[in-house]
Image (cartoon, rainbow, N blue to C red):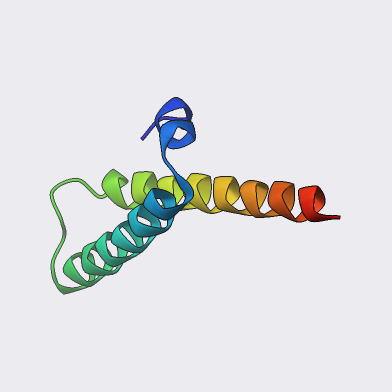
Length: 69
């Protein structure tokens, strides 16, 4: 997922996507622990997507907090 795609999402969509990605990461880690998965770099990509989503959510929360002050 690219940053431009993340910026287009609403805050609710970001939260939903973040929970989906966390679930995906959990499943990938479990599958990789049981037996080697076909593409282990996918775990890294999912982790980076989670970081991007979390960063954007934090940025939006900080912006809304500063607007209220």
